[in-house]
Length: 523
Ligand SMILES: NC(=O)c1ccc[n+]([C@@H]2O[C@H](COP(=O)([O-])OP(=O)(O)OC[C@H]3O[C@@H](n4cnc5c(N)ncnc54)[C@H](O)[C@@H]3O)[C@@H](O)[C@H]2O)c1
Ligand SMILES: O=C(O)CC[C@@H](O)C(=O)O
Image (tube, rainbow, N blue to C red; front, side, top):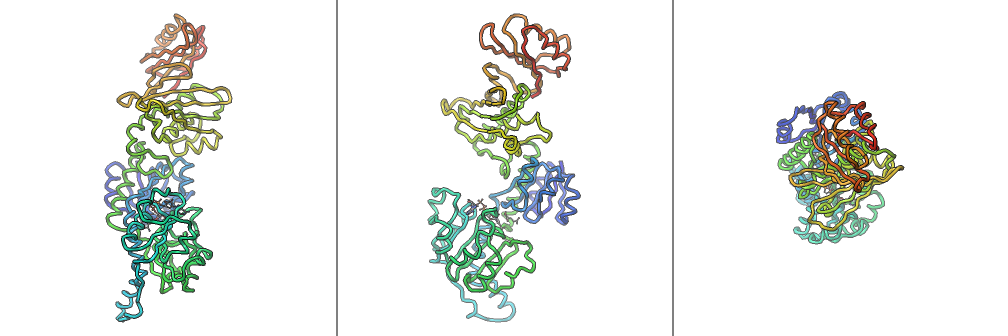
């Protein structure tokens, strides 16, 4: 498997990749050159420099894209998802680095440090020119209270600042111990002496601060943006800096990077760094290592730690849930081989310990299995929910919270335009997944390899006849499971066999009297 690293990442990450994969580090490529060679790679690792566009994604054979850092706004995640490409990032490794850089910028803009250094180095001694303002006692507005925003808020309090915050997506309890007043955007803008941004660049946050918002702010406010260019309208910011509405501004990020002739850089009250928020030795090692490990996991088909476009599993539930992910996929795969009809609805019903867990990935695996035998472009854990949605399949989860100490059980209930069918399963000790039911029949089938499933009348002789036909055709039976609704009523047999059953043999089996149907499935 081949990995292309197209932005500079720490050697520690490269070494991890090299321990298992063939790695090319090419940080000199133009977009056209990248497009030329991308088809030869299974994985791509980037920071914020490489633009992973829809066009690049579409002409690639990538299985995974890794972002050594948090923001994935340089990656067309939607295009990757539609193509079934996993996107992973390293969201925690640079939190402290970005938080500390925010304070470096805040102190620097408040005390005019870069301007003073520059003046001194050019031979001047201008002590009166560089009087700053104090942080202690001032109000800091924090927009976005995720990983970095919270760390900023924590440290600001200890500097004696009053902290007001805006983040409509977090629960109040989440910031309860942080000494923050959580309020609406207008109040943060109206009351803050310093405003710092820690939101991702999304449709909702793009230019969330423009002319109107500057009007609400206090005269002489200071702005710090160490999150993403594009959150603040740069033209409106320029005007506010020129008019004195904004006393000073510190930017680490720009709408266009590098900013080249950005007029903001011509203003004396703007200080700036070239997107250095994550650039500490410590952070770069952690993000490179984290992303490298996830790239390897992804290429091995294992569950990754930091998926961007796939639901994740709680670390403490990971080992319990993993065999259920495999089981659910087999259940879905069995269903579509066994039954016909247009799938309209899939209900995943969880019992036992699973009923207390986040099982979204198990559900997704079930959907992946259902779609696996019917599509030209294979479904995977990334695109399966989107494909299902686009095909009008309604997916629901139900949790039966009884007997929560019992092992987890999962039932897939599929409604088609012809019938409602169910497949049930369980994982026994030692990670041993079993199909435990098909419709009303109880069985105990290891969901692996070749299986012949028959529907027949429960009467002597039928099983023998099937065995004879298989034997005559040199097909070895590995195990046999029988389930019946009632004595001499309808029955179901699941025969695991070691060889593939040819169509001609299946036809012979189907001709047995009182055998209603026989299906050969591959799991
Ligand atoms: N300058 C750098 O080098 C650097 C380094 C690391 C991170 N970053 C950037 O910093 C930002 C924050 O990173 P993080 O790790 O804290 O992310 P995070 O996902 O942990 O936090 C983002 C927070 O923003 C909130 N949010 C989302 N939309 C919002 C909206 N419309 N209004 C208000 N709040 C909103 C979310 O609820 C979340 O709590 C990201 O843009 C990231 O790319 C920059
Ligand atoms: O790669 C970088 O240095 C930038 C990282 C930062 O912007 C992020 O979002 O993680």
